[in-house]
Length: 103
Image 1: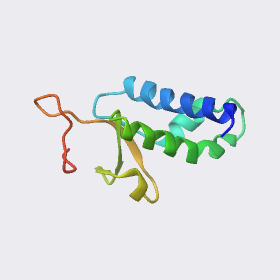
Image 2: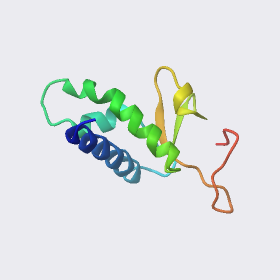
Image 3: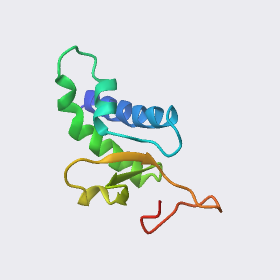
């Protein structure tokens, strides 16, 4: 991986967290939201950032920062096929993450 690719990866991670921070606590974003925000061109070159955005979301899942969802339920990044959404980790009454796909 080149320095430029690492920089884009870090920027995608930051952008995902920033986009979620600006939304309601229960809101979700699409990886394309982050890809579009990071891409600086006027054309549809942001599409090339879709897989890097999904991978960035996966790293944030591993760090306990976000969840990847399909159909409103949290899924493991490696098992997600097709469209996904990204949301903040849902916290239970004690402050810990909600498990078992809890909503």
